[in-house]
Image 1 (cartoon, one colour):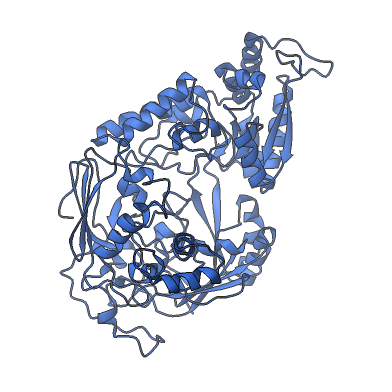
Image 2 (image 1 turned 30 degrees about the vertical axis):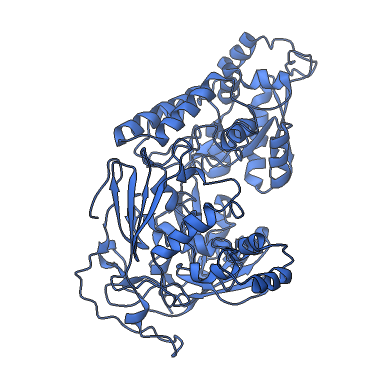
Amino acid sequence: MKTIGAGLFLTATMIAGPSVALDLKETPGLDASLPPVAERVPSEPLVVDLEAKGRKVGKQGGSLDTLIGRSKDVRLINVWGYARLVGYNDKLELVPDILEDVEVEDGRIFTLHTREGHKWSDGHPFGAEDIRYYFEDVVSNEDLTPSGLPPFLEVNGKGPKFEVLDETTVRFTWDEPNPLFLPELAKSRPPFIYRPAHYLKQFHGKYGDPDFIAKEAAKVKKRSWAPLHGKKDDMYNARNVDLPTLQPWVRQRQDSDLRFILERNPYYHRVDSAGQQLPYIDQIVMTVAEGKLVPAKAQAGESNLQARNLSFSDITVLKKGEKQNNYVTALWSNTKGSEISILPNMTVKDPVWRELLRDTRFRHALSLGIDRNLINRVLFFGLGTPGNDTVLAASPLYKAEYTTKWAEYDPAKANALLDEIGLTERNKDGIRLMPDGRPLEIIVETAGESQTQIDALELVGENWREIGVKLFAKPSQRDNLRERAITGQLVMSVWTGMENGIPTSEMPPEDLAPVRGDFLGWHAWGDYYETDGEGGEKPDWAPAQRLMELYDAWLVSKTPDERNKIWEEMLQINAEETLRIGLVSGVRQPVVIKGVENVPLEGIYGWDPGAHFGIHRMDEFFMSN
């Protein structure tokens, strides 16, 4: 790194510098018509020192089979590949990846240097023009992006000054610091602030031939160039087989919707210290299988690498099949703040429920009324950590009190709190009555995707009966659940906990504040924030208002110390208010490994940060046979 900006930790750890002399080797089996490897990789490729990482130098070739639960999960290839402009390493540090370098000044001026000679998967040069096309012709174009610039490109409602400095260098300049910018680029689903301009321009109204655009639009039943461009511009979903990519594997053929073959990118920018171009594996084959059948298929040896659609409850069965089918079941650390979290809907429309759910004593009573140790023993063999939905011990922000506050099992105290609220009357079954006379019966809705959640709710229901609360678990579907949150009909739901349980202060605290409409606990507040007040409801509850203020303060923070203090207060508020009722964290994620080398036996498994296999660099995995 040439310059390290205040509050930003970018490092070249585990990346050999440009001075390393490389004897580049040709990849066996590649199309003979392709240029030699020295012309396919950048003049300064990213060189991976595998031995320094405790890994083996691998062998190129082979095919890796994995199972996915639905056809659209083919997009996971762009998650697992995890080639990003900047990305997290296994120490949760941001490192340059696709970019050769990033210079940051005052936390607000970002100069991005692409690699000279870097090429898209079709062999066309990648550089400043592709970033310019994204910024000026995609997100700044009202036809393609009518909502305007995405939030990570705005600071206090104002976008950046954008400059192209030369063919490999661009600069984004904001008036104030933008700590959201680089972490956004490192996400498992990043914004892809670059586009293959040479390919997409033919579909753009500013550049393309009108007759060609009209014909192409008619083929896909689109009325104009903008929706046609939107269909072709598919950087994440892996549906457009003609779209060039910078990821390690690329979908180049229109397969069936049941089996997808992703082939190595011959122009990929990473190489090992022995001069072999990554990825090691020639192709990834994704086969669609019903989610409930994936554990049995993995046990039968039908997958070389499998974590998707596997859960803790599958470990016993998977372990039994190891010897017969020649695989290993690794147990990675799940990065969720809690394996299961019960979410009171703070923006429910029913006024009686709304008042009750916003009463901190009520949420405390529900939390104190749960025997988490019992749930841990019955469902997770006692291997998890009972407690709240919060940051894990692996996070530098961790404090033990965040896990334990209001999370001990104390039914006497829970009963006392419910009495204090005034919920003293009961019906003949011993269930307390709400202020309007209705029995205190809580419908906890589920997405219907996890038997473990249902089993946990059954145990919680038994506990709650002791404090005069009846729980009904109502399996539904994911889309229906979200729709009921949007309409305000949802009273309470169950979901997995905070996606990122191992944050650093440099990561945005969006899980802790009502700033996203997709969170089932406060849709209306999150929608208000996301739409700048055009939708949803303005928060009228002090803790939610304070969390929103703190999140906004993080967005313009200048130093790590500022961000640490913001995170600490937000975590304290979440713990004190019991906004989520977490049950057990630290539950292990089974990862089946069959005939694949360099896959760690101990790792982290999560979405952000983590990208499932991505943070462990799947392009460095290789087939043993």
